[in-house]
Amino acid sequence: MKRFGIIGHSKKENVGRAARIIIDWLALYNLEYCISEDIATLVGIYEHVVPLYDMHHCIDCLLSLGGDGTMLAAVRAVGHYGIPIFGINAGNLGFLTEIMAQDIPMALGKIKDDDFTIEERMVIESTVIDSGDPPQYALNDVVLDNGEDSRLVGLDLFLDRQFVCSYNADGLIIATPTGSTAYNLAAGGPVLQPRLEALIASPICPHSLTLRPLVFGPDSHLTVRLANHSVNVRITVDGQVSSILLPGTEIAIKKAPHYVRLIRLKEYDFFEILRNKLHLGARPLSNNNA
Image 1 (cartoon, rainbow, N blue to C red):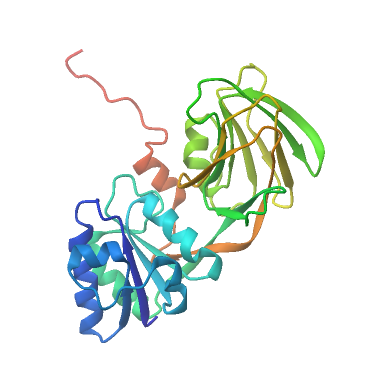
Image 2: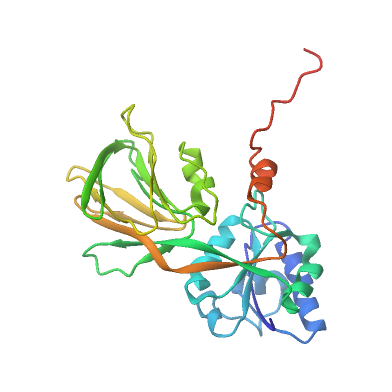
């Protein structure tokens, strides 16, 4: 790969320093690059600025500096164009990122020499029916919740236009396998291997003992209908794009026609990441003084 895009979270510590390391390395090898406005402000270079949503025209891959939020922004901007994305962790958890900042020169060398693999991740497509708005795409999840209100939300769920169940809850999460370790996990939903293809429907604090998360196959077409009494319901895509829906609105959710392509420098060990970052199966620390 010879043409690189660089984006980052301008308020994350060390993003500016990591960006400078990348830019100096790319210049050393006479490789083309473009940067977002946030990165330009951090490093003081403005002649290579390209708006994020135009970068797909001039790059072979996109380098994301920050945490998972920055990765999701990168996915939203270039994911549906098939541009590979590489995450460099300058945030906290960094569940989607590949390396830490100190490994940048090694990683760039591998990417320049095409010494990597591509991992494809399923994406979900959500459309607010009869709104005239274009579909939104999510790598993690689409969430319907009560927004600023504390009242319960009434929702009906349909599979291929056949009724499944009704919810009275704080909301409903429709997640991908990648998103199964995000909000879905906090809401008590199942963890799925990210290479699987499925849709997860997890209620948020349901007012019922019998409502539990459901898992649907990749060919499923889900429809969520808001009850006529449900006002100020908010839809949020990947935690970043949100709007308020009217009572009775229907939202169609299905597997998207494209995949997000993530650059991997080594074999991806999902369960090692679960152990290291989410402490899967960790025993409580013993108190030797007890």
